[in-house]
Image 1 (cartoon, rainbow, N blue to C red):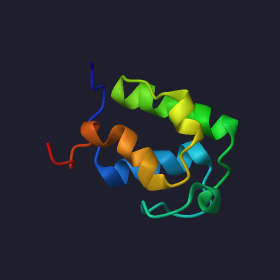
Image 2: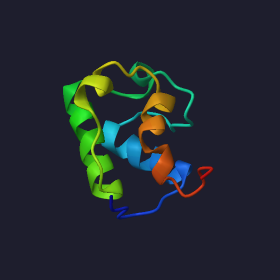
Image 3: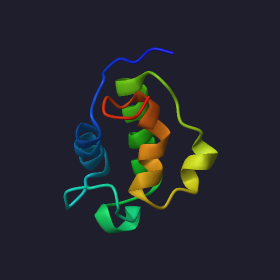
Image 4: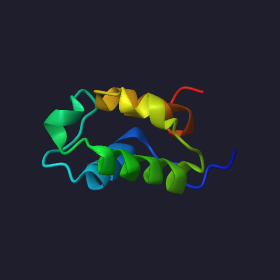
Length: 85
């Protein structure tokens, strides 16, 4: 497993805003439908973000069931700089 970029949770939220074309600032408590388009393209963008920044992949089947930003954060929590190790 190769971590390409070590980022904080806030940096992850900022990258997620860009990947999702979010209209608002993401803080982690939002429902995905409330912050931007959460469709198949957004899921692909998220998968690309995780691959590019963390060098890992996300299970597409699990990703389809996600409804909250906090659930997306759970996928990458082990790779976040400010995460408890």
